[in-house]
Length: 126
Image (cartoon, rainbow, N blue to C red):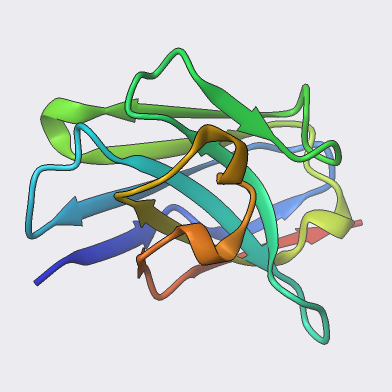
């Protein structure tokens, strides 16, 4: 059974940083793409960042480009989201997800991902 467990969320002041982690278990994910999405209260879940099976392929939402960095450690079956320069509008529950059969051009779509974590809360105060 595939499990994804996010951690690293919390409360931070605007301008601060957080590093989210997503540990995957149940199979080897080195050949899978993985992504981060977020959902703010009253809003739809939205794409944040994705990383292909090769760590050289990354994608970011325009709203986080230049502030967030996604990375992966295949030996640990873990991906990370380094978030710098946080803004109050980054407040949301952050979810990680795994895509096994995908095209790089589809990595911003929720439907591309087969497995999801339970999410971790990130709150940015002004």
